[in-house]
Amino acid sequence: GEDVEQSLFLSVREGDSSVINCTYTDSSSTYLYWYKQEPGAGLQLLTYIFSNMDMKQDQRLTVLLNKKDKHLSLRIADTQTGDSAIYFCAESVASNYQLIWGAGTKLIIKP
Amino acid sequence: SQTIHQWPATLVQPVGSPLSLECTVEGTSNPNLYWYRQAAGRGLQLLFYSVGIGQISSEVPQNLSASRPQDRQFILSSKKLLLSDSGFYLCAWSVWGYGYTFGSGTRLTVV
Image (cartoon, rainbow over the protein chains, first blue to last red):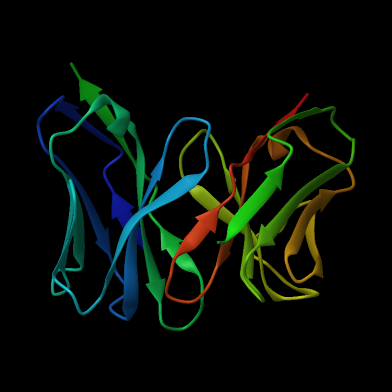
């Protein structure tokens, strides 16, 4: 069945780059998403990439998609304390409107 | 612009009491609507989704139910709450290909 996997934690120093990785299993994915959840809040869509793209950049965020390996990554340049959050990877499949979610990666920023 | 309202933000209810959480969407028509539960601040569990008025699909068996009395209104209910119903409940809407937009969530504590 469909599955999305992420590491549970990532710890980086303030000012360094963070790279959050995600793997998925469904080769019919059409869109892949990154969401951010700050403590006690709902999920906020950060960025998304269409499955026929390899890369998407938006200010400090860079999304890389390796469709052959079914690997998605989110790079946050110059990580700040405000980037502390849980980051969810999700994929949409062509058959329905639902998203398949990863369990989330908690990004911890060290001073 | 599209917005989603979810209330209340926090709720403390005794075991055996009823529940009603409401979610409304503005600025879009015929959205897909979703109720998720997030336990222990981590993964998302899809509870219900709806593609139209009166159309509800349940993803997990439980003592919760959902209704969509109007196009942009989605209600999560229970006749008798259990301790295990405690969690963070998130409402979301989507239009195909553009990901989900989440409400700010309801923290439910059953005591």
